[in-house]
Length: 140
Image 1: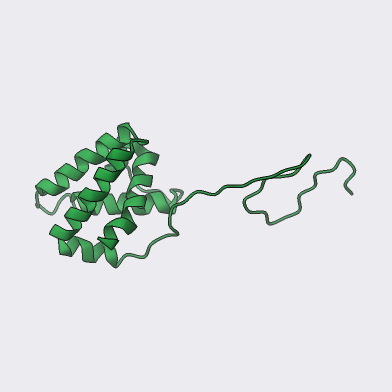
Image 2: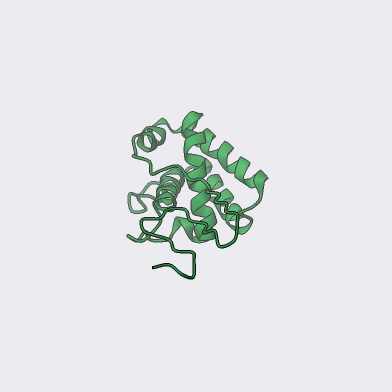
């Protein structure tokens, strides 16, 4: 149950980023680590990680793929996101080998949101700065 709670945000992030193509999209070096990890999770959960092995996807895996497609069409639907979490939890419980594989993977930093606030005239709003920010007209 904890693993399902841990990996569901990655899966949801990948679905939101790539839509219905999330299961087929090829990873690139420039892809965001969170989205790439979410894709990897979804491919493993849906049985699309090794398409040439001759194995057929289970009913749980097909149901999960259907929910992925639905959530891709309505990424803000909280009910579909909840359904995805439940399906991931059930699938991991039914397939301990898949759960063990995913549990052993190194995770990127957890997906989240950053809020940056600024106040005052000419105040910069910056998430990360490795240099100098000049806000005045008479800077040297």
